[in-house]
Image (cartoon, rainbow, N blue to C red; front, side, top):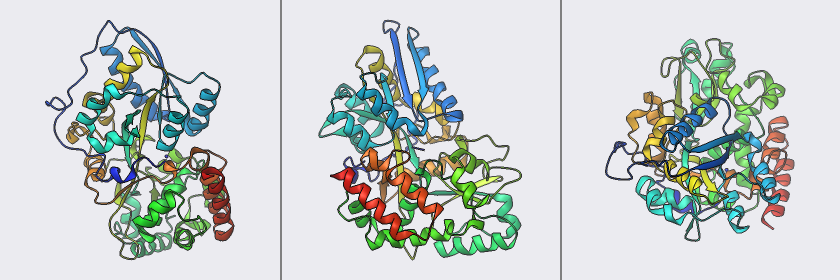
Length: 431
């Protein structure tokens, strides 16, 4: 699922994962206290297996703070509008994890979230300046980016690749050739879950940064160039290689439009797969149950180079913010800065921590170690473009980019119509 321009240049090199050990001198852990008491409500996007993993993190906190009760609610893909409505109604949760820095900025402008400057040092000690600054606005700390994501990944079913005699591609032309070979072998190349639209925004961003370059990526992010720019149309044309033909997609276009993201992953992570590949972030193994083993059953490759483009990672993150100040809420946020909190989810998989004091060896397999580590190793890193937009344009189901890219999958030949709609929506959002 689930993400606005906050000192984006400082994000390069963010999300560093260094095998520094969980008990080192840097960062340290939270000792906990029975003196802190109360009840706090927490909202985030995570449901299903991800919710179960986050519950392990919550349980770790309540072991340290036995007199604090934490109630978690999943907002799913509607988290952003749910939080906005709750803020307008004067009844937000105590804490929430938002995937859009722009939404965090909107809340800060309305004085809806509380500064957490007292935690700045702990955040920097554990995550570094760059990640800390993702949760800061004009020098004031508002958020803790607890969970990161490498979204420049394509997952594949190993058996399908072996049956067709193809290997993980390095270039876009190689990918197209693999797709053709898979189809010739009777294997559907792609599983696409349009969901509410955000998985297709991720596909676009990976294509766009490779076809248009980093400078235009930054310009489009800030709406310094229009969405009708030829560079956008060129990227959509490249995307037609995947979504332009119905028989490229598991169940065809109509089924792809009705498929949620976890199902699109399950279609590939399966003993009897519906398709060979799914374009989705490094969190894929954590969103579905599978009997396949990493590397031998399913594997991953980096989003391919397009016409000689340099390597680039598009990523995201979930930033915890505090709507209601309390001792218990402060303690929970401080706990989230520790490597101990990150380890509880990291051990379960489907998670990448930006905490530099987390030992990468806690990840359950070599794939996760590689995809999580790639975030820190990226020479070119950009935060997910849609997450850097105003929420009404980049993060709301049924409108803005989510609707535009859904419409594009439904009618991939209407590039002019889609880009004109994008630009009209962008103008409303950016004023």
